[in-house]
Length: 177
Ligand SMILES: [Zn+2]
Image 1 (cartoon, rainbow, N blue to C red):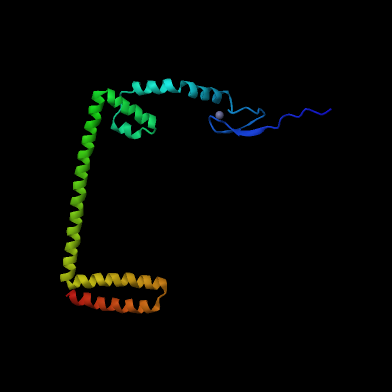
Image 2 (tube, rainbow, N blue to C red):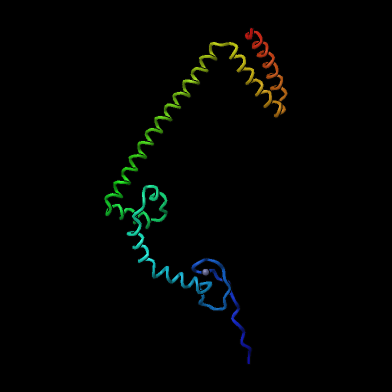
């Protein structure tokens, strides 16, 4: 003659909300009655709800198309477009506007790139004809290199760049007159 022992409780993850819960019931799959109800509604109310929203929302635009995350939502919008001429025209107009903005942006980028090219060409030309500018630039580069050599503790390079700096300092002084 033995004793009854309560079935040991176990921890499961709620099939609806995913939150772990403790239960003695072998067949329990939801953490509580609210999740059981919500799961039931999700199973049985899903189709009618989806059909309703596809027809119901007339107020959408291309922006909203971009934010629709699910395939069902995109399908609903596409279906909507097929059956709604004004909405279709609105989306096409917005597409045309976006295309114009794209073209304008591309032109602006090209303009800026060309401006940048002209600037660096100008600097290169100045560098090649102006010995003072050349010496000043070389001095800056040598100073940066000396700093790197000092950080690395590279004695030979420290000497080399120190000599360069002295030479370029003399040059900038000469060309400065
Ligand atoms: Zn739950």
